Length: 191
Image (cartoon, rainbow, N blue to C red; front, side, top):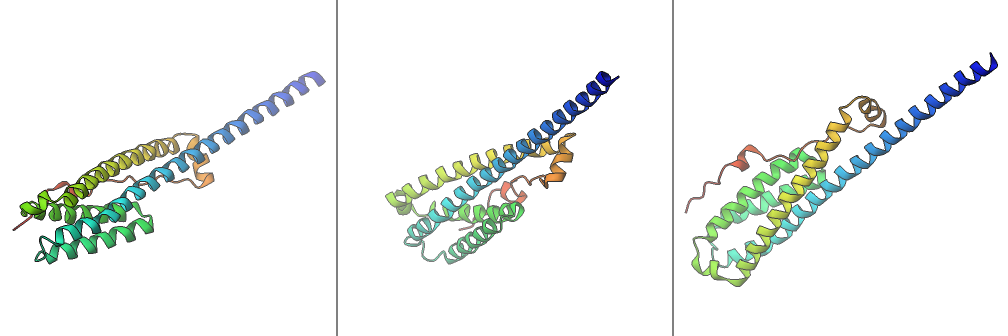
C-alpha cells in the first residue's frame, strides 16, 4: 500500500511540476512577445521622428521658391507638432490620426512643389525628396512589422490556457497601427 501511495504522490508531484513548467514557459513567451511588440512600436516612432526631422529642411527649401504659399507651411508645422505630441503620448490611435493629417499636409506640400519647375530641378529639393521617399518606405515597413508582432501577441493571448496567464500577468491586446480613412484618399490640391 505504501508503494501505491508513493506512486500517487509522485505522479501528482510530477503533474504539478509539468503544469508549473508549462505556466512558466507560457508566461516567459508572453513577456518576450510583449517586448517584441514594444520594440516594433519603437521602430515606428523612430521612423516617424526621422520624417519629422527631415520636414523642416524640405519646407525651408520649398519656402525659397513658394513664399506666398503660407497656408501649407502653417499646416505642415501644426500637423508635425500634433504628430510629435501623439508619438510622445504613445497612444496608437492618436498617432494614426496625427500621422494621417501630417501625411496629407506633406502630400499637399509636394504637390505645390510640382508647380515650381526651378524647385523641381534644385539638388537640395531632389535629395530631400529622395530621403523623404525612403523614410516613407521605412515607415511602411516598420508599420507592417509592428502590426505583425501585434497580430502574433493578440492571437496568442486569445488562446486557452494562455488567456488565463495573460490576464494574470496583465498583458493586454495591443492596438493595430491602421491607416485613417482620410489618408486613403488623395489630397485635394488647388493652385
